[in-house]
Figure (cartoon, rainbow, N blue to C red):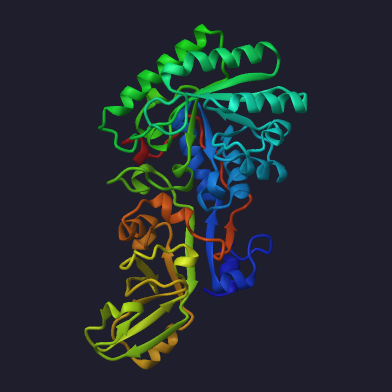
Length: 416
């Protein structure tokens, strides 16, 4: 792809991408895809609101850019894991309601309170947040988290009444406001499993206990992407959508297209080399692969330092409309595809050709799901681990197209 051709489709705008980033390697993020996906979830979740989860630099897509696109498309809240992530969004001018829920003793609760960041509370954090509120002379906004069965963060149901009582005492003193009650689901991506019903039962019990203690929340939330899609009874006041914002499916056996979602990230580069080799040519460290006949090897300048899983031999790379599996071991900076037999002239012509590791899967192109299968992992990990050595560039930073009307859902999603 030439720079001029990229500019014709919007990739090469000066505000989005440099010439060097385009020509070397890049993760191209289509923000219209993000907007489309958020509109889908806004329609599905209504009348509940949508929190777009932009932790881990928006699953590798760029937190500030994705946050702005998600808010453009109707997301009412943003969610992150760490306070530091929330503060970076505030520094970029993002002033939407924002929740951070994973803390340590060294977390900067003072800065969170000062910046109007909502703080998730599982127990021990409560006193630290109250101390920050006193220091800032500003009430903290907190969401109390109950562990309904995941076994990670959150207060156990046995200790819940005590936590709620302490929080309400502090609220009565004007030191905080209990804004929300929340939890997280363990197996919502496996809709047939009974544990989700069990967790929802515990969550409803926790809500009832909190209400009996006088809590009047703005939002109750437990649904993640798969629950938002498959469990309307889990929506409550707010759903937290992570993976779905980026157009990826949380379900085994259901593609993004099946769910009416558009994958937002395309990882692409240019072939560094292309050469004819004889039968029996070994490839990469360990020489675990050898050509079965005279062939042509293409060198792809992406490796595990760029976030390609080292284990993912066999992952597909698309060149000139054909998917080729990676052969031999994936190295730190590079991997090899076997292009089959071709003339010297044809091999030379492929030097510098665009090589797509994964994208939206259009016309049979490779997807993050394909690489997840090759690496025996999930699509979350594939997009999130693409390293900062792969520059991000953005398509459609300005919103295009109308917002979906309330209740509008793609036909594929409606059929779920």
